[in-house]
Image 1 (tube, rainbow, N blue to C red):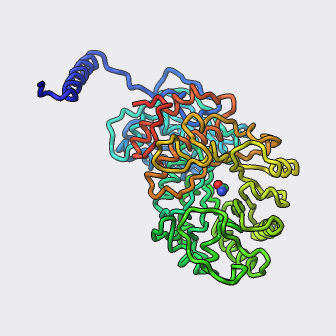
Image 2 (image 1 turned 90 degrees about the horizontal axis):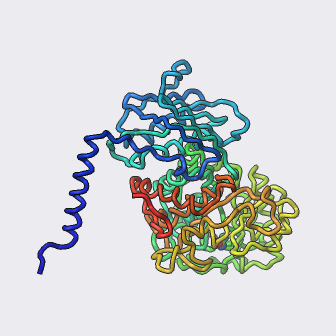
Image 3 (image 1 turned 30 degrees about the horizontal axis):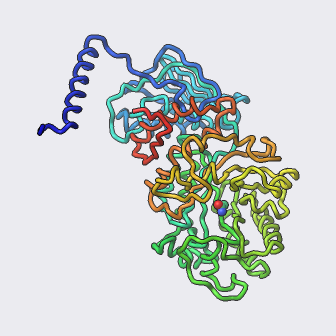
Length: 525
Ligand code: ACM
């Protein structure tokens, strides 16, 4: 019997090949391989490559003054770990022309609030936008034009070369969201911040936090303290749960804002409220608090629609939430209220929308709310699995706008295949290609694309317990959804997209993101 395992033979052959490659590299210096513009996700509205290349030098400075300064600091911060360069940010107005990387606010109405223009020449990288948010989105593009090793958090060899050219970009939809259910399983501040950083790379601009459900209440409310201390004391499976103090919630909101992400807090009601009902007996129609719940059934709980204390409770909760939340939206849930009569449900939704409005915010609700009378400002979030829904169509006729999260296309907790160890399959399996194979502007029957605010990828966490689980379900699918939200409809093509998506694999590896390496994608090494 041969004593040499086959693995070693293959390794030896690979070493020989490496040796000959190194020899030829000595003979003719290899030009650094720059990342093609066609590998950016989401696809920019317009991109033209030139033959020149820019290489970031160790002494480079980043010019970013006035409104651009904080994005300049962010860019320097994300480039320092892998480059090992100091990358000082020059915030004076005079020296811009001599700094190789320049971030400039320059009025250009065609770019809108989040659009940007990126021009790369041999000697400079110039990013311009109307608003800091546009510079921030342009920075995400710039990061993807550097070699994947830029995403490592230890010093890498470089060289840090970027292909010359010009990109002009702006989003198709204003709303591009992710949702994290922190109620079924609780996730601490650091996990949420990591997820914020990961979604920001794909120009996602909202993070909807599903803060309350039957299994847990996850935000300190000073006027009703037992919601968090008792209602937040467990989770699915009986673990310890947890909740955000108001200071922690504000910290998340501020961190998200620094990444141009708006936090949308959800208090789900009138169903999905067992944690609140268990915390305060008076919120129950029979005056008896149920036990805490750690299972995964839905539809068994309801706030007592006929009691005045219910609206005092909601006014207090929404008042505190509105004061803590600078963004314009409060999500009122409204899904699967199977223990609330239709008449009660309609009464309840009407009252809650008004409470939200009284606190200066706009209500978003799962599309179930469209069977009630909606305020003109209220937005529906569509989560069903078929494109036709009579109440949704009727609400759209009256002008209601929608965010699209069809469960069989956009739910990040659905399994990729039957073998996926995490997640659920009640809405179907969603492989990489499925997640990309729909047009949010044309999906809903009877809803004009001008009434579609955008897309959101919800991640429900019945089976999700740690950051690595979140990453595995979100990537690649959230990057795909982000492209559907950002990129123009004309660029929609699976065959070119899958190659661009493939370029994200080495980036996720460099970042330590636990993604699903779908066999449908020709992952780059
Ligand atoms: C939902 O999935 N119940 C919104």
